[in-house]
Length: 332
Image (cartoon, rainbow, N blue to C red):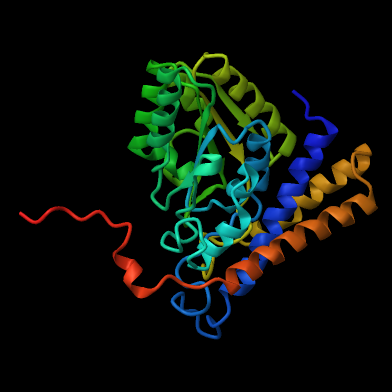
């Protein structure tokens, strides 16, 4: 399955948009956190997990989805949220903790929810797998169209929730696709030190479902594998598993010293940054020219800057709002 020229430009545009968004968030996040790093300081306090380098995973999958399809993502969610069409103004406002955010600033960057495009994410490892299976079950029981896609890191494939979700999805032949973003590191633990199989797509066979492996952070390889899996789900043929070899170009979180990486690893990954690689591929194929690229990049930068202005100019919720949207039991 090959993408059209327009789909190629769409994927590249959203990769550029996601990357610039995170570059700007990184700069803003670090304000007030130097010379001594303190994650409580600055305009964006708390942890921050960047997805730089993993953009192919998001665009290659989401190019096949509509707003009616469900996506659950991880604690590293920005690239997926951008590709799924989450409201950028409200997303950035949520990251800043503002009242105009997706959850009124209550959730922050690891808990983005946009019901308009059926997107959610969670800071808990493997937390999105069960909800994705449940969403797929609801679609099947109601006879409604739509598939569910559960993104996870390779570390989540060692969680009990992973095996429970795959088993139940296979037993009930649900329209769900499981996507593993294998960036080779579960925080600071190397995949080969924690996982008994060399590739997690091999685990699909244990549940009688197809497993796909995409090497080298290949945008169009992701597009092809996702297209096959999503089409299969839409046709009522049940779930699939995809593992994508990708790259985490930043640390696990902002402020991570990354001392666990072997010498030269990060430099090697940066040399194979997927965005300039895909840009060159599109230029070589005549799908993009220099002028069109410059215009696309300028539009992405303008859109991100507008979202940041919106967030910065928005107000925080009043302190008493801390007692709102909270479930409180009746006194006994």
